[in-house]
Image (cartoon, one colour):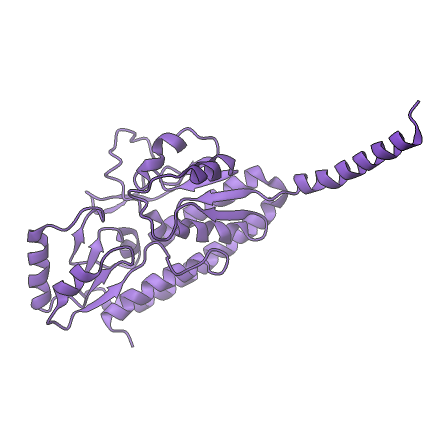
Length: 306
């Protein structure tokens, strides 16, 4: 028979165990997104029911990022990892292609992708497995229609891993979609007056945004931000700027603006910054619609809206 001391110790153990178990059962899902704009979308859907963490720091480019041991730990311990796909984060292809917790967004059902060589939207049914990764434009978070599908992917995954809060995720998704559609319509109205204005981009990344708002750049300094523009390209762009064809040239915060400043020197062409990585926004404080409106505001500044 157990003495009173042993019974008391056993009771304390089971009381402590019962106090611990509910905390484990109620632990929130942990989501990881590769880049901050995806984090903004994920957080809009997660609300207060899941934690969202962004893998890449603000200063990093997803085109050439090198994983650290701490990154591998975040990925392996996450309930879900949302990445664009090898079209953008090629460094994650081997790690995430067959991972159970990974959601590749370019191949998510219903995702309307565009191809660089086609220059227009193609509603891909993703049976084209022989299509080059280089052909698909991976900058899907820059398109409002594509971002709705991203939000759906987050909602679907969260509802699966946390069915208790599925209704909340569905409500957040519905609100996200309505707010984004409203913001898209407002920007379309404002940008429609300027869709024949000329401008140059630092790199070829904004096709989804420009398709949504019927904008068309005169050109870009480089296709890949990791490659320096060629001399012939710079001469051509400088000539167009001197002829007054461009309202502005867009730089990006991750890259040295000196080259852009040289291109517009001695002209009235403005230099503005487009931030495709939401550098100055914060997950938890800002929403994806803030990011979309920020992009739209920069285009409107280029075109001279008062």
